[in-house]
Length: 311
Image 1 (cartoon, rainbow, N blue to C red):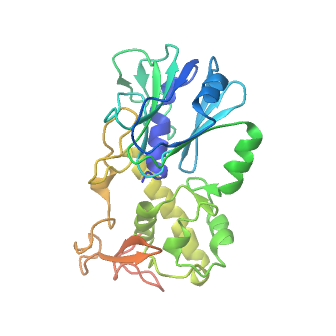
Image 2: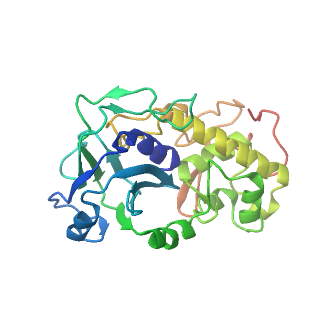
Image 3: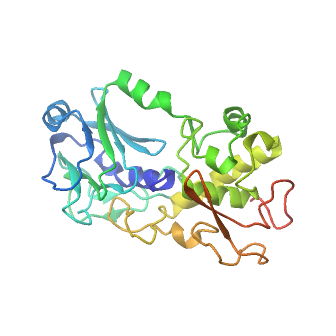
């Protein structure tokens, strides 16, 4: 965590910083494990000071903040990082503060009708937007300030097509000859950007595909189902502002929980009866040192079980 839906929720949540001018960058005093910040804070502050935010994007599991001189601030939350407009969960794990000129007083929220979350469903922050925070409990996240050539080589060149945009044919071309299990392969960010452990399990359950199936054994029809279910699962999770798991770490930009955890079909539901077939309990196995959850009846290595329907 967080994966594409959580990072996309962060992106949409900080859209009010568009048009704001960065007045300074600070690295708050922190006794915890330091995050990777490139360049060092004095150079970082010098390069972003007086720059205007012209776009807020996302590349896979990274938030990208584009400045008016073509530099990009790339924030990779990794395990426990949060990008916030509101006050952080604790002050001990605050890693970076961008001080901003006065901006909007509203925070944009995802909306099904627009799909982009641009200025819909606002939430009053009680005042002008004057700061952007990066908070990270475990200190595994990274913040980089990149010139265009660095962005191309360090980020874009290492990531595949975004999981919200990738086609079935691209998935098959990127992974179809692999001997890896499909669940493991979907985590390969160079093949498809944004899918992590949680959503890979949910996608394959919806598609009715056994997570242990080798990629080179999948048919074109199965790749099409995976692509369709990827879009269905990720869009649904974004609508619910991501998943806040039992540790409570993930929050949106306003420091409130997501709700997609209430809609998980298999993830973290080992030994719970399958909600689709009702004939088997969800199983947990380990693949590539990560937990995988699936239904042994609904998810077959060959054929499509009668319980599986693609919406």
